[in-house]
Each structure stands twice: as structure tokens, then as C-alpha cells.
Image (tube, rainbow, N blue to C red; front, side):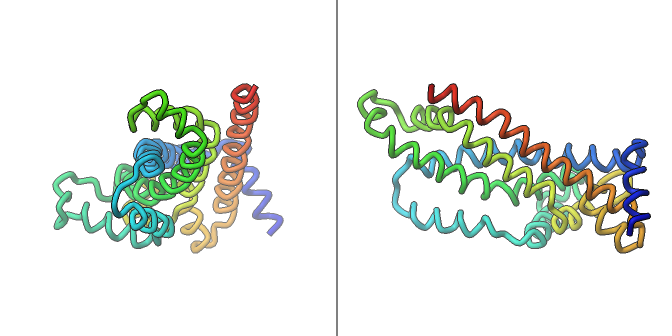
Length: 232
């Protein structure tokens, strides 16, 4: 075990090409999926927080249920749509990074939407009377609430990114874990562990933990000063 850890640290220290190729692809896929999910999820969350319509309660129940979507089910559904016999098969996206981005986006959009809905709904209760007195439309209210809650919503985005970068099942199904093409940190860890190549698996695990800690630290560094300024 100690020898494997030492070899893993050596891979990281000397900048192993295969290791960092996998890391960079993981970041590209997960950051892109998080950005798309935030555009979709924050908009949906803000709408559900502000709007009142028949069936809203059922929509909230469905959204909360979708937060627990099994990753392998998401991967299977995306696979069925992108396979040659599927409705989007003509795009030729299966076993590409784009397919992995689609799967991660489907997986984390409900998480972003549900968490942001709660944040924005709390703010809406506080500002609803002011918005009515100013005559703001629903979309103007949504924009104002998203801006006012931007620092809290950073945590929502971080939660989405954390879920995306740690995903294994869905990206394995739609990406195929192809070397130098669709192999990301989590799928590589699973593969290398099964092969007995513990140094590379441990090195990837260390990098994954550093990324998670770095994202958390970065969000806190942005959030705390911003909140102090906003409430000054």
C-alpha cells in the first residue's frame, strides 16, 4: 500500500502525460455540463419559485424525485437516444465527450433546479411586496432574485459540479471509457483498480480530491467577501 501511494505521488509530481490527459478531459466534460445545467436549472428553479400555477405542487414533487435519478438509468436513456437506432443516432455522438456532457447535464440539472428553487423562493418571500409595488413582471422578478442570490447559488453550482465530476455509471455507458478519447478520472479509477494498477488509480483519486477541495475553497473565497459587501 505504501509503495502504491509513493508511486502515485510520483506520477503526480512528474506530470505524467496520461494522468493529466484524463484529468483535463474530466474537467472539460464536467465544467461544460455544469455550465449548461446551471443555465437550464437556475432558470427552471427561479420560474418555479416565482410562478403560481395549477399543478405546481406536482411539478415540485417530480423535480425533487428527479434529484435521485440513478446514474445508470440516465446513461441508458441517453444511450438509447444516441445509438444508431435511436432518434438522435444520426448525430453520431455516442462514445464521444459530447455524449458524456449530455448525460451529466441530464443528471445534474434537476439538482441545480431543486436547490436553486429553494434559495430563490426564500428570497421571493422577502421581496414579493416590493416587487409588486414596483410593478415588476415575473421575468424581471426572476432576474432580480437570481442576482440577489448569486452568492448562495454559487454553492448550488458547486454541488452540481461535484455530482458531475464524481459520476461513473452514466459516463461509462455513453462514453465507453475509450483510452485517449472518453476516459475520465472516475472511469479510469474503476478500470485501473480492476486491472490492479493501483498507483494510477490512487494518483487519479488524489487529483480528484484536490479538485473537490479546490472548488470548495474557491467558492468560499468568492462567496464570503461578496456576502459581506452585499449586506454592508
